[in-house]
Image 1 (cartoon, rainbow, N blue to C red):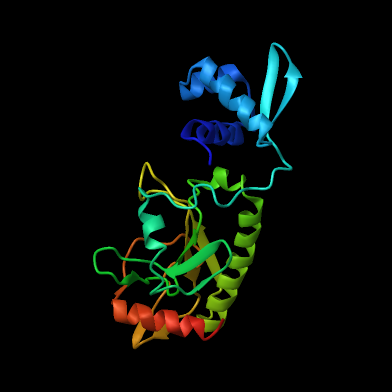
Image 2 (cartoon, helix red, strand yellow):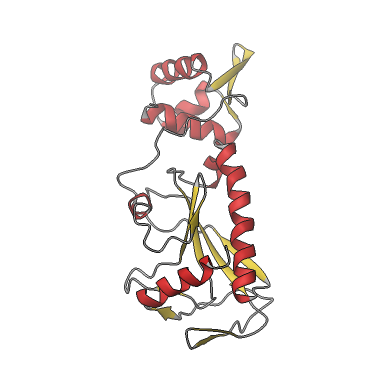
Length: 228
């Protein structure tokens, strides 16, 4: 299990591609001794590779290191990690991702101004998009999940394209990477007696809410599932 210090060093190197001891010390505020100790361990474990000659020595993520998905699978301080335990409204899941309809936290329902709006979440606690590069198998799995989601919404409701957003606002500072996906329509769509209109098709989405109840959210999940 990685320590918090080593995990932060890995995340910093991942963000910068490569880093020296001095850069890590200045950016993260750890002592040179602590950084040297952690780097030595990470190189020995195969997490990092060291290159260059003193005084120009740098560290990179080992491209051949297979990620250990058992590390930091969940974060007890992360609201999204806690939410992943509830599969009541889950549409489908893969080895590494889960797909849910958007959640309106006030009502327990869902904002479906753009019918089929979903949230796609990694099961592992990954704090942001750059950190996803540490887990190539999870990243590749996401591509499959994204394609499956788009195809099923096209079949279910006739969506024409999709707007993908990773806003990362909720849960700060314990952010958890997730995608909010908005299907876009060049036609009205009727579901459960409600007409859903995309007034700005071909342009940016607009703020607004069409909140459906938890009961209708469950009905929406079941409808989408019939097209899986």
